[in-house]
Image (cartoon, rainbow, N blue to C red; front, side):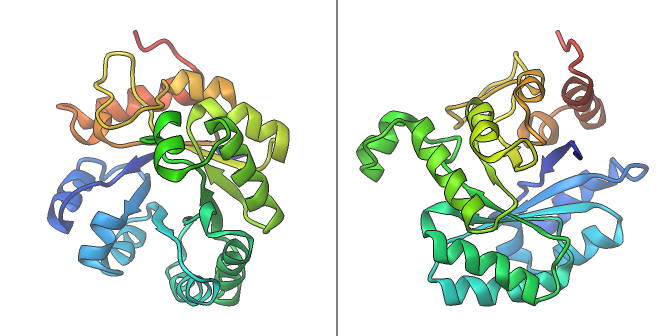
Length: 237
């Protein structure tokens, strides 16, 4: 099973994105394009990333009626993206429509994965704001099982739920885990975080890392350090 560090390109504009990528001219990356970058710059971002040979995680977190999600997924299939997200909270029919739309558009190679609970969500917030009475882990596992039944390829969760997802959905069901920080990093707005080594030990296939790389003084060194820690479970202390 493929494993990789995905760099979150959470920049306010395309110019800053390209400046960052120029640091890695000699390396093919796996990068995340989220709502901030895609909605302000459009498909040109995806086209340029593909031109440079990078793999793309398009993290748009679609959540709408099944027909709309089907049409959106079908249209996005043309960009030959590697990973694509929808919200598990949209339900079985919507999840199934997302996968079917991607296939109908020719995106057979694109892995469609579902957002379970955001890593910025605590169990207390989930209870108070979403009125979900079960534990946060139960909610995540429920969404993962729902996504698998709908034919999706995996889910996004925190590292804390990865082992349970593997047990419920199988080792090959993709586990993509944001909220990755080195021990000395500021956790920012994240609530459920883990180190690259912890993610590797728990069974994450892909870790998503933004600020610890994009805001580092030496961006290449930070990326290599996290990559080695995840792929080799090296000691970063």
